[in-house]
Length: 122
Image (tube, rainbow, N blue to C red; front, side, top):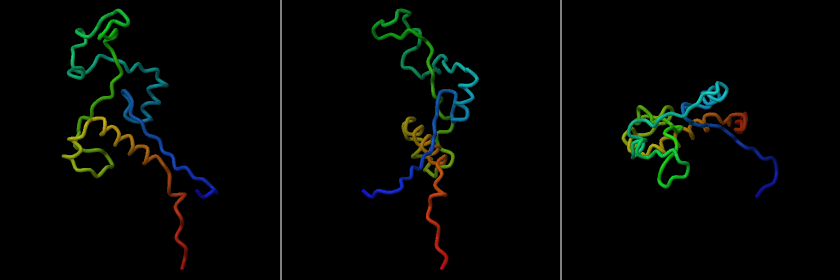
């Protein structure tokens, strides 16, 4: 490995409950917003009342009917800024679509133009 100057190209991205961007996440934090809520219809395999038990630690039960959810995309056939086939994107597991969106945010946030070698004049 060569020793010398090191360069790190760093970008940041994130998707959180009620916060599809980091700017919105910061607003949620500074606004002291509680993002917990009842699960969207059909999100859980069981109805919350079936899974609920107020006793903490009850086997195979939950003791809160609220959780923090990352909303599913309304349009699963496109991802802003990514040139990906709509049918392929629609067929992906939602976790992979979240990964693509967050990765795109991080890549777009990174600055590489200052580090690219400049073309030498002839």
